[in-house]
Amino acid sequence: MSDTIIATRESRLALWQAEHVRDLLQQRFGRTVQLLGMTTRGDQILDRALSKVGGKGLFVKELETALEDGRAHLAVHSLKDVPMDLPDGFVLAAVLEREDPRDAWVSPRYASLAELPQGAVVGTSSLRRVVQLLAVRPDIQIEPLRGNLDTRLRKLDEGGFDAIVLAAAGLMRLGLGERIRARFEPELMIPAAGQGALGIEVREDAHELRAHLAELVHMPTMLAVEAERAVSRGLGGSCSMPLAAHAVWAGDQLQLSAALGDVNTLTRPLLQVKVNAAVTDAASARALGARAVAALHEQGAAGYLPAA
Image 1 (cartoon, one colour):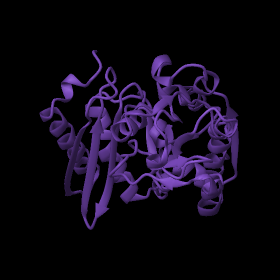
Image 2: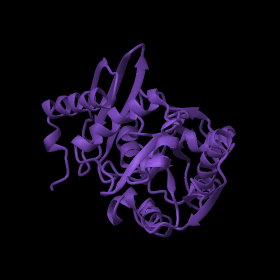
Image 3: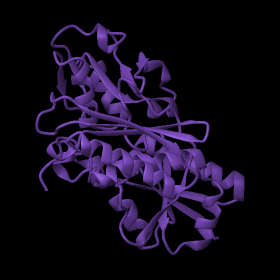
Image 4: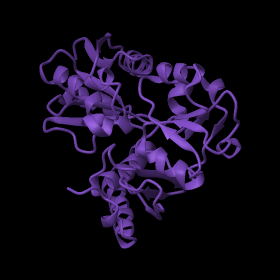
């Protein structure tokens, strides 16, 4: 391989992620690695919910264009931002070991969701978080919150919200763990598919690069997120759907939890399922995800899904 170029968004968190992979490549393979910083449509559109303007794929399209035309060799993504089906010609070459996948409660005034007074304002633009928060506290007010991590924290500090909910992984990676007042256990707030994991995307025909990146794969994380992403794929999942999926290991058994809310009636009771199986490869992980989808359909998932 010649010098390797990583396409990355320019937010502080995206740059941390790209630099993390750069350091791994330099340490493991003695590569010379450069970063190609880019601003994506997802970074530019901050006044509307992602579900209204094209979904989380807006964060990856420009990076894929850079891979396609040869300006970059790989892109590093938060896996929860990666669409369930990549465009033809692209593959996920590696999934790295997961950081804490839980959601974080961030508030200068209230130590937990339970402490909030009635009518308090919580910031999040994730429909998955909205339906799970309202399932516990239907009396609170939830307002949209977009922007990168620093922007969201600034909006909280300026008094626009009583609390906000963020991914713990991003706060930990940027050394902002002290901002976390509490972490939601998955029993209360199931994370998004792939949350806390980093994925490396390359062109399908980059065979030599793929062979190197395969050595970075963390197999327990990769199999867990395969199962989670299979749930989203099976339900047509996107950020316009309040869907959660999270898998954890118990020995050789993978335990998969999933929850689905109704995008049209956010206070409608959640559909929730748990399934488990011995998982040894990607195919058995995807089969477990398909079982969770079937179980959700048995509970009436079709009536919760947005009209095609």
